[in-house]
Each structure stands twice: as structure tokens, then as C-alpha cells.
Length: 402
Image (cartoon, rainbow, N blue to C red; front, side):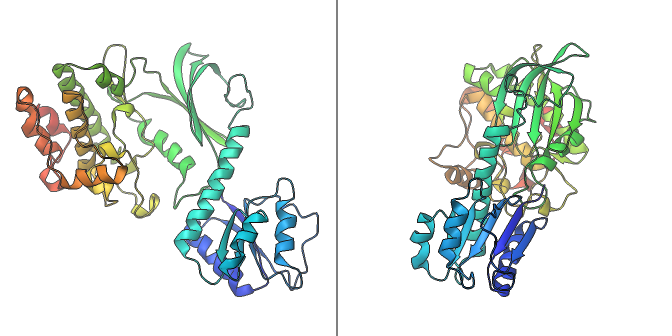
């Protein structure tokens, strides 16, 4: 779903400039422009309906632009307004009149504009999500069009998605139902909705004991859902917090490595490997989940946006933390971090903020295991080497070393 923006200003070049800024970042944006000088002023009952955002310049012909701004912002349900004034002195007045943001029309940076537009649109999405996040049935929280599932309980909810424990009525089995609502794409390239569908496409065809099983996919105009295996044993994070045995750390690492070897063999990177994305079945077998950040190796970098960082800093490889190209060896590094945490109960690198952790991943030495665990230091060194070329090159090698 594309974002819809209306630009209102009497200067054609300025309208074109704003259009260029938006289209550079959101190439699928639907943008309309209106010239109050040649077309006359918009009617008093103009509501902005159908737009996600209005950009209002201070060139409104013979009408005071602030009067237009006030009329817009006092209209119930009017979309957010970004006001462009001729001088920065007008900022306070514009904000007081209800503008969601202000920019000096002859002196603003592309990055600042794009970031502010994104923030405004995401805020609107959060409001929409609160009011109607696939909640046709408020008692269950499951979209009324998702037939064949009996709601049990909600497991998690975020800005764009929700996760439920449900029962697939035809099979009588418990499943995890992950639902994503289609919203305007605010990112470069493909957005959250498309990544959600890619997640299914990438893992649905994989049959491996250490990868979550996918049962069903459903797609509608405004949402998609995936029904996947319910893993009742909890996640690895809980296991680590409870304190695990050395033998479990080795066994789990072998199983995770086997899952990675499988996904890597078909050209998939996980890119968000962490204890919370590693689940256990009742029999203690590991299953890798949540490939929402996964990426087919053959896709170009533009798919997720140049320089954009995904993942969790505690488990990021040095190259991922610095937004450089990643390959299978990045997942191997993340598994090395998890292996260390399972053995010691501690994360290898700590800092007061995310950038501090990322810096340590790139610059601090590989952590040294306690003497009693010294037999694993060599393989840990090869998993957590700072340079990808110094690491183990294939996840299948990890089990051999262990």
C-alpha cells in the first residue's frame, strides 16, 4: 500500500522539489499537487480525505497561509500537516496553529524531511492500529476474515502485527497464528508486509527438525496470516536465564548450526539470530523461528535499504553492526555469541547503549571462557572472529568442531 501525500503551494518549482524528495525515498508514493494561485482556493469543506499527509507551503496566493493552516488543523479527521514557511521565525506560530512539523522552505535537508515524514506517518499508523489492528472481533483480537481458527489467547502485539495462540479447527492442533496488517510502506524497497510474505515463502518449503513447521498462509487485501507450529517448550532465552548445563549448550549449538546450514544451503540468511528466536519443543529439540529479517542472498542490497541496520545489537556481527554487506558467516558469528552466553550465562559484550555494544563487537577481543570451559575456546574464536574470512566458513563445520 503506497503513501498518499497532497502538496499545496503556489510555486510550481517548490511543489516539484517536494515531490522529488518524497519520490526519492518512496518511489511508489501517490502524490497530488495543488496550485492555489491558478486553481483557486480549496473549498471550506475540504477535509483532506484520502491523504496520509498534507504538505502546505506559505505561498497561498491572496490568502494568508496561516489562515489555511488553521482551517485544516481544526477540521476533524484532517490528516497531519507539514508547514513550509519562508523563515524560521514562523516555526512557533505554525506549531501553535496545529502544524505537525515545520520546515523553512528554502533551507531544509532531505534526510531531516524524510525522517520527520516517516515519524508522522508511523504515529498515524499507531493510532490506526490501536483503533483497528485487524480487530474485527474485539473479544478474540483475530481478524473476522481468518476462518478456521479458534482463538485461545494473545501472545504478543506490535505496531504492525500480532501473534496468537489458536487452534486449527480442522486438525484439532494448537498453532501460533501470526497476523500482519497491510499499512502504507514507509521503508525503502519492500516493506513489512512484503517481508512477512517472504518469511513464509522462504521457510515453508524447508523440512528440517530444527526449523519451525509452517502449516498455512492466508492473504487478504489488508492483512496476511501465517499458521505455524506451536512450540510449547519456551525460548532459549528462558533456558539461559534459568541456568543450563554445559552439555545442553553444546547440544543446542549443534542443532542451531544444523538449522543454519540448511537455510544457508538454499540462499537464506537469518540476520536476527538471538535466544528469543530459538524455541524448544516438549522433547527438548531446538527449532529456529522468526525469519522476518531473513534475506535471500541473491537479492540486491536495495531490498532493505542501503545502510539500514536490522537485528539485535547484543548478537550482531561486526559487519552487520556497521551496516556492511553480510553473508552466512554473520549468522555464524551470532551463534558464537549465543554459545558463549549459554556456557557462561553472560553476554560477551555490555555497554550503556546500542552503539557501544556494536563498537565492542567490532573492536574488543573475543571473550575468554573460564578455565573449566577452555576446551571450547578454539571453536568460539573461529565463530566470533572479527573478520568474516577468519571465521568458520560454513555452519556445518561447527558440529564437527564441537
